Image 1 (cartoon, one colour):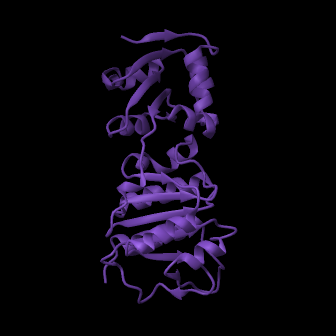
Image 2 (tube, helix red, strand yellow):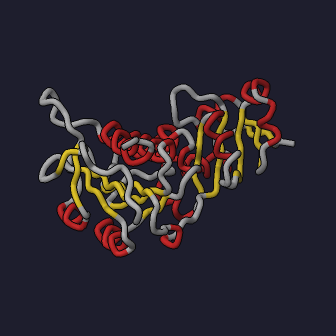
Image 3 (cartoon, one colour):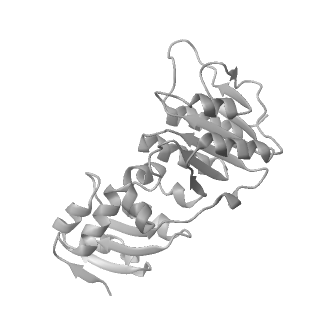
Length: 261
């Protein structure tokens, strides 16, 4: 049986809002905030632990299955839902989930990995995590000031993909690339210059492959690019100089994921 929250100043509500707004608080609490019916149901159906679920009476009437979810349940009035909402088109469903813990020991030879360095746009990070999951990659490495994979905007863009594969946040990408090289990986930097066209590049590598993508504006740091085995680019006409990071990365993920020789 759910409890009813009528005040926007309720402690549970303020706690959830702080999780939504602060990456440092999320890391401290090892918890994150999610919004939306489909996203919360997908996350709850995964291995992630649902701690708290908030929903409006309208949302519960529309989806009675919400009452069967684990965790603490709170029925919130509409004006409380307005405070919790991080998007303009709120569905009146919000969850607090425990953040998973992943370590380097999960990285084994022969995997397909995506590494992002300095990708600050949460839409691009979420899109790339979603594409990595869709095309059969085994994990994601983040470093260099990437947008938090557990922020509401990243979670919405990823549509729950963060629950489908391990995500490791690392302090220094070149060091991670060096470790992967030592494990037998082929590490491929996505770069416009001093790179070879994707055409003719093998789709798979027995020792494992790591696709390394940088920010849309700055690209990869010189140190990271030098650490990689090789640099590749997507062949394009001269009508545009570059692609959006989420689009370009998704093309590359397809190529090394489900692309055929």
